[in-house]
Image 1: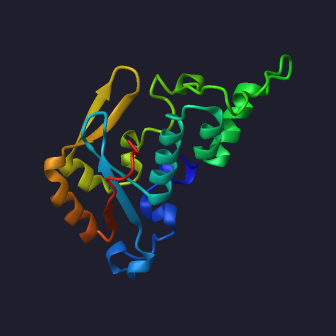
Image 2: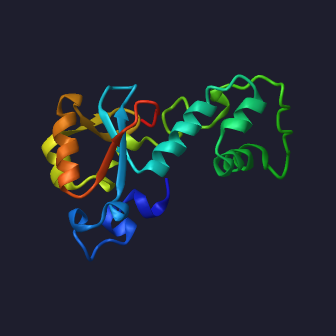
Length: 178
């Protein structure tokens, strides 16, 4: 996740501090995508760029071969992983061949839940506090810390509240971006 979106408000991240979101023209309003988490069924909201990136990474991590993994993985994220895993100056390790089997356990932090970013834990830097407090509940995991649980029974209400606050909101059931 980019630093300018991790701990800042949507307005500040988009440079919109001077004008209320609901008074912006539709093309300038921030867009949020949402889906249900496959982990706990809570609603997860994200900027489209974040959601798409996390979806692409999660798809790539289910690849069967290294060729498939390389093709599906966002280029910058792939290069970061390769540099972290294979750039040991003392003992360089060869990058696996295209036909070699790929497994997500190769990626540091994947099975621990540390990679890729868990967007459900980052919604306090995205959604207005008033909306989070009204519809969400702060939960805690033993390993990965706090996250926001938004019960899907509030889906219609939270979408209306976000739209009234000036967001364009779109459900994306075709993507997985926990």
